[in-house]
Length: 233
Ligand SMILES: Nc1ncnc2c1ncn2[C@@H]1O[C@H](COP(=O)(O)OP(=O)(O)OP(=O)(O)O)[C@@H](O)[C@H]1O
Ligand SMILES: [Mg+2]
Image (cartoon, rainbow, N blue to C red):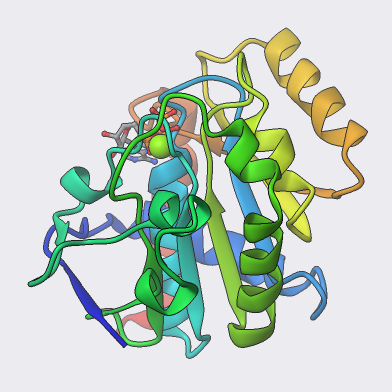
């Protein structure tokens, strides 16, 4: 299998790492049949890729063979943001969906033990037809069989149908909501859209919470002290 290295994985602060860990544990409680999980949001910049990459890493870290599929075929910044590269020319999802290469050519092992990636190597202006085609269906069926978990990073739901197409091939969705920015109306709209697919909404992630707010500081301090008490000397 071909190899990619991830040179810029962020070191998360304790509270963020713990929140991702909670998400991982909660998804585990959804049942063994929930393997392919789509991460989406209403609008750009809410943290879909951030949640996807960190959830993927934690799932792999606890021993699950976990595949991250970058399905943001229009705008993905994952490779530059996380410094994902390899020795050879990188082939990605678009090459496979367009029939130029086969699955083996686009599933990469990474330096995260147990963590595998299908990257986006070429962007495409209108991927809808490719995502509706049978090659995408075949890819998802194969990956669901071959891996313990498949985390699917997507474009925002607003404006384009890609996310809804992708959802129909997943076992569940997680909606990321940017705290203090995304309106309730937009969130409700996204939930309604997702409900039209037969794929269950597993939960929402309230992301990018302003941790400098007084109420949060109070909570964090109490929690951290408690943790320190149990875990410390
Ligand atoms: N919980 C978080 N803590 C710190 N930084 C975050 C968090 N969530 C997101 N970010 C940062 O916010 C920026 C936008 O996040 P990200 O790229 O994951 O959003 P996105 O929803 O995938 O955007 P797009 O719709 O463009 O794909 C990135 O710089 C990311 O590192
Ligand atoms: Mg993204």
